[in-house]
Image (cartoon, rainbow, N blue to C red; front, side):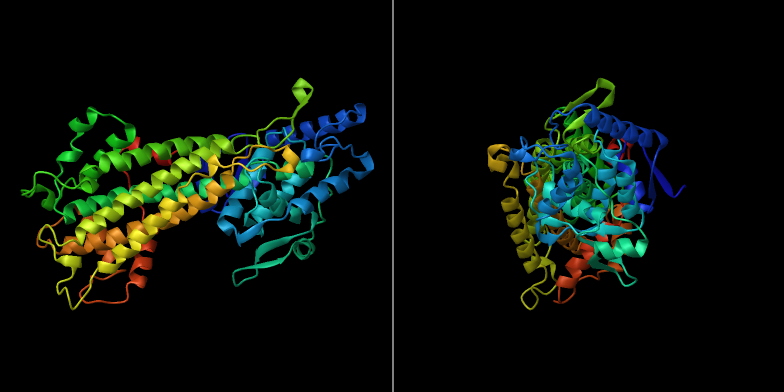
Length: 512
C-alpha cells in the first residue's frame, strides 16, 4: 500500500482510520490544488476590483464587522486574529486528537471555498507529515463561530508563534514553534487576506474529538455485547430473550443486531444449553437487546453526523468563484455536532449503567455463585469493592450527561447571541467514553471469574478462547489482592483486543 494519502473532496471514517493506523502522509490531489488556487485568485481579483467591505477580508471580526481595515494592514489583521484568539485554557488536548484536527483542517480548506493559499494548506500538511503537533487546550470554544480558541492555537505556529509538540527521541516535548520552524528550515507563513479567519473558523476541534471517540466507542459497543454474553452464561441466564422471532415484532436495527450478536457469541455454549430453573432473568440480562440496541442506533446517527461534518466547509464567509459571490453565513455553528454528541453521551452512559447492574447481580450470591465471587467470603472481600468503583463511575457519567447543547451564553457584544457549546459536548463525551471502558472492564473481571465457578461446564468457543488469552494478563482471583492493576490491565485488554463481527450488517457500523 502507498504511504501517501491524497486529499480529495471525500473523506470517510475508514479513510481516517487507514491514515492514522498506517501513519500515511498527506498530499493534495491535483484537483484540490486547482480548486484552492482558483478560489484564492478569485478573492484577490475581487479585492482589486471591488472596494466594498467583505466580512473578515477587509473588516474586523464579530461585532467589529463594520470596521474597515486598509489593504496595507490586512496581513497584520489576520495575524492579530490568531494571536488574540489563542486564549484556550484547561488541560492539553491529546496528541492523537490534534493529529486529527490537522487532517480535518486540511480537508475542509481543500474544497476551495475558503480563500486560503496553497502554501498555507501545505504548511499544515508539513506539520502533519513531520509529526509536529501544535499545543492545543481543551477549553475555550463555544462551538459556534467555529472552534475559535482551539483552532487559533492549532494554526498560530504557522506564523512562527505559539508552541508545538515534537518528538525529540524520548517522547513528545513542548517547544517554541519559531525554533521548530528554524530547525526545519521553514519560513513563517505570511497570511493574506481572509486566511486567518479561514484557519480559525470551522468545527475541526469538535469533529476531531468526534472521530477519536468514534473509534473507541465502536470498540466498546462491540465489547459491551461480548462482555454481556460472558455475563449471561456466568449468571446462567436464559437465551429466550435473544430469539430472532421475538425481535421481528419490534425491528429496531440496533435491537435486532444486538440479539443476533449475543446469539453469535453464545452459539455453541454448553452452559446456554443447560436447563434453567428460573422463568425469567433480571432486566439487565433480559433487556440487553433493547438497551444495547438503542445505544447502537444512537451510534449509527452519531457516525452519520460526524461523517457528513468532516466532508463539509465550515468556515465563514464562503467563496463561490463560479457564482461570483462571497456569502457570509453560519456553517461554523456546531449545533449538529452538539446534539449528536449529547445523544451519544446518553447512549454510552446507558451501556455503562446496565453493565454495572450485571456486575451487581454477579456478586450477589445468586445462581449458585459465591458472594462476591470468592471461594472464601468473609476472610476475602473478593469482587465486593470493584462494584463500588463501577457504581461511582456510572454516577459520574450520569452527571456528565447533562446536555451542553441546551446552554447558550451571548458573546461578542450580542453579535454571537446563540452558541452550540458543542466543544463542551465533545470533551465531556470523551470522559464518558473513557469511563465506560473502566466500567466494562470491571464487568469482564467479574464475568470471567464467575464463569470459572461454572466448571466443568463451558461457555462458547469464542468466549473460552478470549478468556484463555485474558488469563495470561490477569489471573483468577483466589485470595484478595491489589485490584487497581487488574482493572487497568483489563481495560487495556478490552481496548486493544479486536472482536470480529459475524455479519455484514453488523459490520456496517465500522465501514464508511
